Length: 172
Image (cartoon, rainbow, N blue to C red; front, side):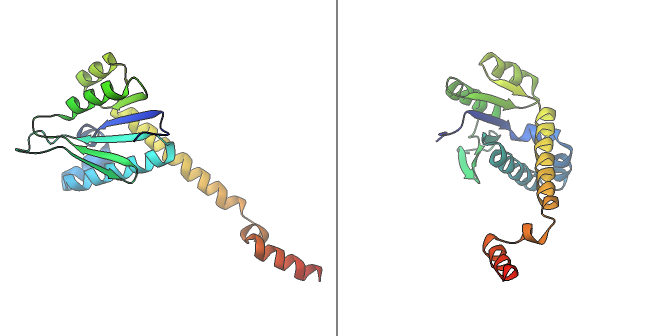
């Protein structure tokens, strides 16, 4: 399941939604929309970094709720079962994966940070993850812009076959 991944990022979903300004405002309109935005962001983050992301949402107050694990565009989205908090689930995952992988936990919950640090994981505050994600996306935008700028001549914009055909015509 984690083949090819050296690092796992466990994300406390509602903690991040409540901490990131863009997701806070989305949550005020519609919680599902805020969750979907975070899922989309984490999918893109995982695709760009190669880091395995497990995004965990509390559903512990849902009576009779069973744990739901979905694979969405390369990340796992987990809704905890009844009486299981995201913190509980994340702590279990740190114990399971901590021996074989570098595990980071994204949350600004101080008690949870202390708990996962004690189990060998690296804590990442919501603000640190926000800055990391934004820097990653900004770097990608700059790289894409540089690729567009570099293709200034007609020859650079043509595929190889078309370019060769034109060169043959010019040479006569």
